[in-house]
Image (cartoon, rainbow, N blue to C red; front, side, top):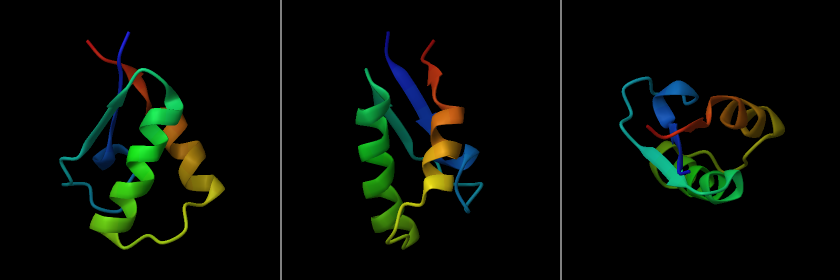
Length: 61
């Protein structure tokens, strides 16, 4: 079942509409890292950000 993570649930911009989708957490984390760098200027993905992301990934309805 596909999974989704919405940036506004973990990022600094609570109005960001970016959504990462994938079959695995790894796919989603790759998308989130790329998005964080290009859209939010986050060069280093910290362990805290990874943990926050993992805690907000949900099964897509």
